[in-house]
Amino acid sequence: MNDRLVIREFVQNLLSERGDRAALSDSEQLAERLQSTDVLLVVVFLQEEYGIDFAETGFDLNQVESIDSIMALIERRRAA
Image (cartoon, rainbow, N blue to C red):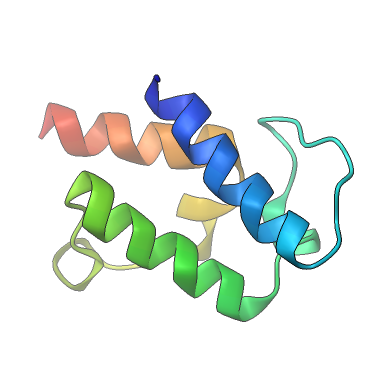
């Protein structure tokens, strides 16, 4: 499974756990649908699955505002 599908599935599972089963586009603003604890789960997921160290790189909510922005973050991490 490619990274975009993995990220989308993870986010959709978080939303589904909250009863939100509406369609999700890759450019959609996640902050409008995720709770703050869900954002923390996304951060932990990215640290564990992709080795992104937010303590080292710093955290900005814009980095996880959409599937597209998460993918850009992963790609920047790989290019570094």
